[in-house]
Length: 254
Image (cartoon, rainbow, N blue to C red; front, side):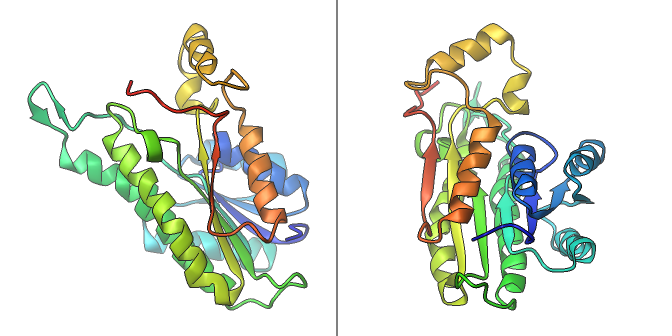
């Protein structure tokens, strides 16, 4: 898919992986709408790339529809590209000091990371399937964000690993559901990346974490996630696949 001139949505686009991807899409000529709850950072990110910002709760139907409508109004068409980067990573063990993990905390992580991802997929895809077919035979492409925790969740990651495992598991099914309409669906599963969650750690801790990656032995840069997202956009045969982006890292229990 040639993204030049096409409308795109990036959820969680105010920072980290989402912001880097929004910039990469814009640099390639896409008209980008950023979805995020952080208005100040979202407006700044949108202004930086000449895009549009919409304050959206990805797990809420009405909020997401309003965001899609705002993007269409700003860019003259519905989005053919959706990149789901919105998510949270709150920690909590199944049982800690004899107390079970709060069910509401578990539900909230799954609601944002998994339900929110699917909510954006279903609403954006419904619009993509009604659009004209592009010269390459496609109507749209959807890229989700999982994590290596989907495969090797660490101690304290039960909710996060569950949510990201769900994203991995639905990727092929969504791709199959949308295949006859010419809409692809893939997922990227990053390892240790320098996102806001890790930027707050001391530098020596960041270096130590990066050293655990076989090669390259460092934290991933958000621009590398963006490169992978662009590769998926530009390669029609990649469909229904989850790509680990982790430098051959396999997470230890803790």
